[in-house]
Image 1 (cartoon, helix red, strand yellow):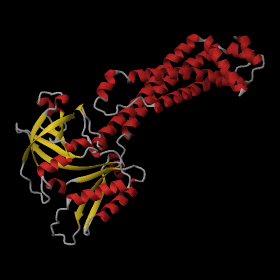
Image 2 (cartoon, helix red, strand yellow):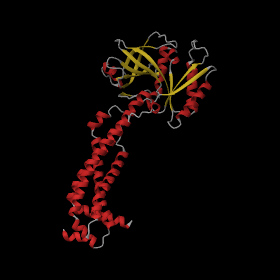
Image 3 (cartoon, helix red, strand yellow):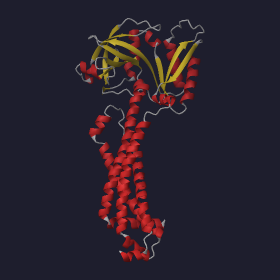
Image 4 (tube, one colour):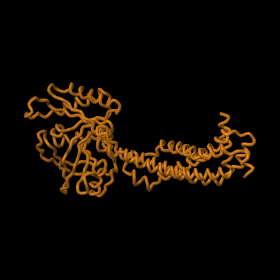
Length: 417
């Protein structure tokens, strides 16, 4: 420990003496580490943003969809529609039995506004917003108390809200829609007009010429009738660890709670499951490209540092020869020169990480890349730690060759210089 502390002390003193060389080294390494850390951090932040987007489509890992149907041995027989109340009771009893905190019913609803514009709506329970990361731009998402309203509550798309003149949410704006769905055999139900209060605004996903939105599940059922529940999907958000075993156990439990002759299907829909099944990592190519760019940047910075360090050692031959003449061992000289490079690059690496953090926190960047995310990604600490470790590694590699040159210096060389 004493030898290491002594070598570090000597390295620090040498850095103070050779300020100009240190400054040049710091500039080169700081820029390289800033670029390296920034590229790594940006890749992780963008991946987190992509993941949130995919969770809006397929749900958070691990999201499981449950459906119940009447089992029959006759392939030509038309199954009878399941009793929605019985299926709902079995589903929610199962989620409670297994300690699942997030569960929702989901059904598709067709709607038309008085202007004739088609609306794609989903009837959902409040937990759906968390399970599917539904973004809310204005107002709020559904609360469980919304089911007790005398007027149905809806969350509408941004283009629909803009067509209404962007009324403020505290004014409790209302919309009139004509709702319909399909019966169990695929027959469309008669449309029913209803007035609903707007509690929130979400992103537009149905295109510029169509609207989309959500309505509280119980309100939709009260409007269009039991046909909605007959075609509903029940979803539960369960832990990823042991998801397959838990899904099968819940499937068996729900089947046992249903009347004789009924079966239950369960299927994960989240992106993580689809990624595992397909054997393709959507972030792999991106990380590979970004990693190659970062490695190239760091290599160029390391070569520049190596060149500066070699030139400096050539100019210090007299000094090193004198030290060898006064008894400095080759090991001491080796570690002194190499640790000098390591200390310089660690300091430069810290400066580069600070630069990378400041750049990636610029509003111009965050407002364009992460504006629509519910949880804008913070600067990943793993990227900062990686940048610091890599800067130390570059310093060690860049100082290795100059240190070997310094070890070969003999006391007689001091006289020549």
